Length: 143
Image 1: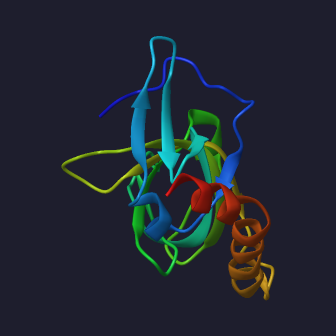
Image 2: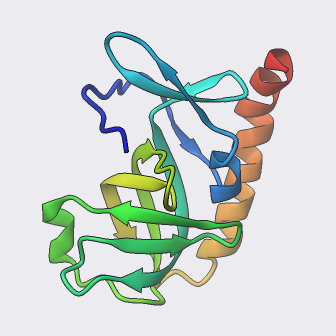
C-alpha cells in the first residue's frame, strides 16, 4: 500500500463511483503520487454510500456505493462520531490502491447524510452531471 507524502490540493476531488476507481492507475513523479482515470489527474476521491462494516474501534470502515466496496480509513478526529452499519455517508479523501484488498480512502472529511431522504438519488445525478460537464471531454480526448 502506498501512502501519500504530499497532497496536491490543486487537483480536484473527483465525484465518482467505486466502479470508476477500478479504472484508475498510478502515475509516479519524484514529488508526489498521483492517480489518473482516462487522463484526469487526481489524488482525492469524493464518494457517497452505505456503511456495511464498522470495526469495534472505528478505525476501519467499509462503504458500499451500489457499484462496489471501498475501505475507509478515518482520521482520529473523525472517529469521535459513532459510525454505524447502515449509515449513508459522504466521504472525501486520498485514494489508495491496495493490491491484496479493497481500495482505500484515507478520509479527510466524512459526514453522516442519513437524515436526508433524497440523498442517494441526488448523488447519482451529481456524479452523472460532473461526468458530462467535466470528465467526459477529458476522457474522450485521452483515449
